[in-house]
Length: 66
Image (cartoon, rainbow, N blue to C red; front, side, top):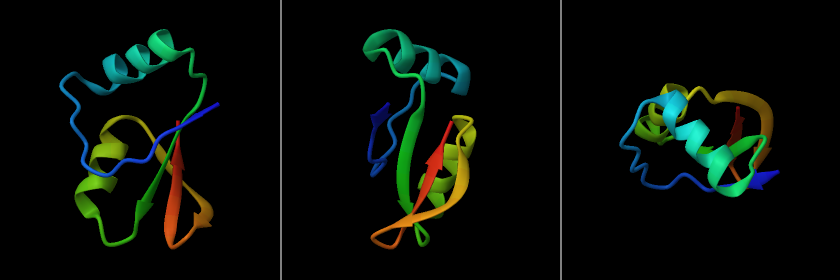
């Protein structure tokens, strides 16, 4: 599993293209990010990429994953 920290999203292709690139480039099977509850823009970017929030929280940030 590859974990990434989404701080400032810089995605240039659509959600399926970004996930496909991640999976092909680094062999990721699951994409995981941790986003602070105050970062609505990062939440929107993660949602756009097809990630969904989970019930887990780490250091005040909610875990999102594909």
